[in-house]
Structure formats: structure tokens, C-alpha cells
Length: 522
Image 1 (cartoon, rainbow, N blue to C red):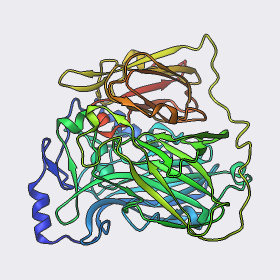
Image 2 (spheres, rainbow, N blue to C red):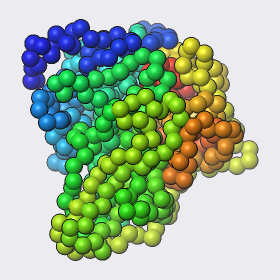
Image 3 (spheres, rainbow, N blue to C red):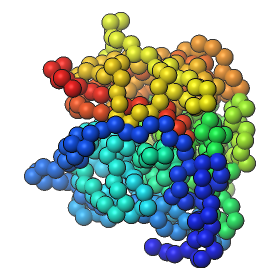
């Protein structure tokens, strides 16, 4: 690990605290509401990993550690990052995304059995959450099962998810509040792709024609030090940086040819919503979401991408001329008073990915008219039970779900579901902020979106909401009611559901739900 000079080490030691600016200090920045309630015996039982005697198809080490990396011109920046090493499996399982701080691209295949040794070399607890994957609760990287500094945890799971773009990031919660926002902002996040034979047969753009893009906004001070602003303002609106990075670097022009390209995009920002559009006004062609390919492609004038969501886009440059340039931008929208306090306010317009055509190439295969015609979503009937979750702001306490905030592993009676059942969950946003709601352990279908009131100051995002396909995170705008259909399959135990505005979840807008069998007494 590279070392910082004495001046920067002193700065790290002196700046921190809930109300100030922290430069990647392990000091707690966020207010705590409750600690976890889990008996020691239960915790030891949950820590037993699902390690079997069966052979593994893939095995790797994933380490969280401090490091310094070049991000901006000049001095390198201090980060926390994931590094990895493959011990078993196909060579393309792990690959560097950009040489910057985002974690390596993990490429898995449906049906593989995976073993991952997770190593914590940070000065505080961490976890690794496999965002969007259908895995058992003790593998899910939840805050009730932390990895202590200097310790390792081995997890195993079977890849039983549709082909698509997923991701991994930390999910710790300490005695002084959540640390998801801080640790993710420090650099602990990486993309994960699941492949399968069905998708491969579609012959979609691959190799140099497949662009994996992680969008994150960051703020720098002094000698290129990453800074993280805490305090009540961030607690209410979330953290907004003053510049956007793509794969850990400032946006740079990419040279392309005259052929189709696939852009697989992850919103890895703490709170920023992106409005993705093409600079020349052409429609945006969507082929997939966070749960894999759509049944058929869709076109929108722009795409609304909330924190933790992923989108899979197709763009055809076959008719372009050498010298042409096309830029993926985040277009302007209205974000209310809460989104304005930043060097780059929520709703500002800026460039993300400039593409410059530098060569003529073979056109490549056309976009299939049908992508996943057999796409299955959770079945519902008029008798399917509906469970309502009110999203509100509590005076002096931040945001809540049904009037509750995080209480560790405490589960209310109305947060217990039955293994094998399908339900409709209804998120009703009575607050003045958007909430990207994430449910751990499964993929769901968005079945209804309805305005129920005013959206104070928020507009210009509605047309870009892609509700088709499967999702693990859905954006609920102010004054909206969104219904999702979800089936609780395969695994009993505790899972989280929460807002994925990271400052909201860290400050209490997160709860556990329990999946139990019909015959269980738990």
C-alpha cells in the first residue's frame, strides 16, 4: 500500500465529525438511531458459512483496503478500494475496470458455484453485499454479520440469477450509524456481470463494443483529497459531489467505430439521479435493467437512473461518419430546493461519455426484435395481498418507513413474509425527496405507478422511468405510489429493504424483513 506524506496524514487525523467535512477519515460522520439486537448465540450460528464438499467452479479473494490512486491530474488521492485475486475458475472472471479505484469487474456464469474469501484490511467493520443477487441471507453482506478489521469471511453461493449487470458494495452499520455512504464513497464498489447461454445466443455487442460504465459524483479539496460532507443537509438530501467520474476518472472521449455498441451503466452515486440522453436528441434504446434483458427493446427520449439502478443501452453508429461525435449526457431536470446545495446541483446538465468515431468497421449484427420473450415476472391476481410502506420525514429524525427507522435485526409483525408467497408491496412517498427503494435477496416487477399528490419542485424525470423487466431497486418520486410484485423463494431468514439514497439508509431509512416457512415458529 502506498503511503501518504506527513502533511496529509495529519489532515486525516484532525478533520472529521458529524457536522464537518471529512477527508476519508474512519471517524463516524453519521448519526445513529439504534444498534442491532441479535443474540450472541444467534450471531455465531449465522456466521456458519454454507461451505460444502462439492467442487467450486469459481474461487477468488476480495480484499477491502486503503490505497492511493491517480484520479485527477497531480497528486494521487487516498481511497478505500477492493482488490482481488482469482484462485480458481475462468480467466475472465476478474478484470480491471479502469486502473482507478472501482473494484474489479467480476464476470460470472449462471449455474456456477462460487467461493469468495472476503478480507477486511480497513480500520473499521465492513461487509460485502452482492447487490441484486438471489443469495442466502448469511451471504448477503448484511450489517448484522460484520467482518472485523484484520479478519476474513468466506462465503459460498450458487449463481441463480438472470444474465445482467449487478454490483457489490459494503453494507456496514456501526454504533454511531450507517457506513454504507462513507465506505462506498471512499471507493468500495464494483460491477458484477452474470452471463448465460440464452443471452450469449443473441450475439449482442461484446469485447470492445461492450462499455461497462460506473457513474459516481465526488468532491475534491486541497491536494486532490476526496472529501465527504456530513451534517444535517446531507442527511436530508444525500451527498452530492461537485464533479462526476466515470469508472473512477473524469469523463474522457472514447474512440469508436461505425457499428453497434452496448452500454451497461451503473449509478454508483450516493444520492444523485442521472437523466441519461444523447447529445443529438436521438432516442435512447433500452435493452435491459437491473434484473437483465427486457422482453423487447424500448425507446425513450431519456432514461432516469436512480442510485443503485443499472440500465443496459444499445446505440448503433453504423451510419456515422469518421470524425462524428456523440455524447451521452445527464440532461437537466428540476430537483426542488433540496437538490441545489452543491457545486454540481442535482438536475444540472453535464457530459458523461463522449464517443468519437475514428474508424470505419463492419456494421455488426442488428438489434434483435425479441430479447427475452419468455421473461417471467411474479404472478399476481386480485387476491394477491398488498403490503403498504409509507415513506415520510419524521421531525428532527430524518426519513422513516411506516414511522419506523433502523433497529438492527428487530422485525415488526407486519415485516414477516411467508416462504413461497407472492405479494404486492406498495411504496407511498409522502416526503419531499425521491427514494430509490431496494429490496434485498430477490428481483421484482414494477406493476403500477400512480401520482397521489404534488411533487414539490421535482419534475422532468417521469418519462425516463423504465418499469418494464425485473428490478431490485425502484425510484419512488415525491407524491407517487409505486406497487411492485415479488416472490419470496428458496431461502428463509432476514433480509433488508431500504432507500438506496445512501445517506437516507445510513440515517435510519432501512428495515429488516423476515422470510419464514409456513411451519416455522420463528
